[in-house]
Amino acid sequence: MSEPLPLPGFADGKDPAALRTIGEVAAAFDIRQHVLRYWEQQFPMLRPLKRSGGRRYYRPEDVALVETINRLINNEGYTLKGARQAIERGLTAGQAAAPAAAAPAASAPVEDRPAAALPDPALLAQLRAIRTRLAHALASRQPRRLP
Image (tube, rainbow, N blue to C red):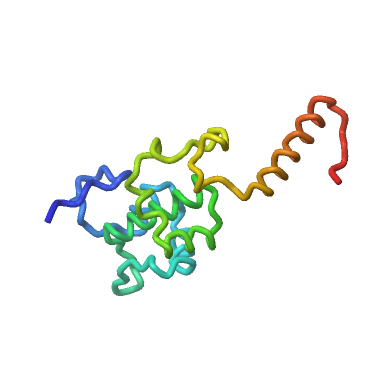
């Protein structure tokens, strides 16, 4: 079995398979400890070990899950419910290991994205109409009320 890769944010010299306290995990991801405890309630798959006195110890797989949750919520804009559903469906398993360059850029034109990523054509037409109205409103620089 291969040795686990060092986890991002941990430069403490511990073995990569070592258990981490909630303070260590919170500091590594710049997340407050109460947020991690809240995530334990919202994400049933996040279950760190609890020892006497309720002290939490995060295994490497728990830390990887925290990293995924943090990325989905704080970087990709998922809601808690959406992030939980994405993790439950396994949609993030390949994304966590894939480099960011492999995913279509958010600024790439819709036409350049894969067909599976394209929205419904009727919705796309509505969005383009809204974009055109917004561009005209900004160009005229006159405050308008949206219908």
